Amino acid sequence: MKRILVLCVAVIITFSMVTPQNNQMGKLFAEKIAQKMMDSLNLTNSQQSKIYSINMDLLQQKSEARKDLKNSNNLTRIIQNIENKRDSLYKQVLPDQKYRTYLQKKQSLISND
Image (tube, rainbow, N blue to C red):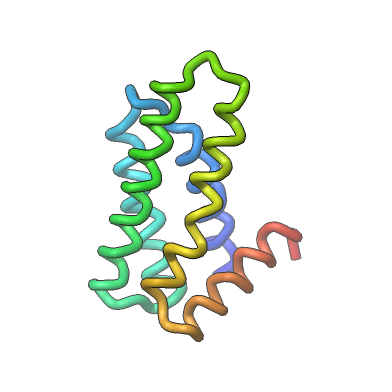
């Protein structure tokens, strides 16, 4: 279970670095994140599909920011702001218990427990 979450965090970090030229890779990462969350949180197909859509939307926002702010010092902050939306978007999709479990697993990964 912990391996799945480590993989999810690694994928999310990599996902945040995807450039517009690697959009196909971003789609693969979005699918992988959704599948790993489905497996670890026992999501329904509908929930998995919504998680995938969220990940794709965030990818698109980050790609657009990279195009618009190529040489800007604000790019890192903008990308982080986009990434910070992820949890609140997931909360709209996941039932309370699954969302709490997701946050616990995420926190465990971040603190390396």
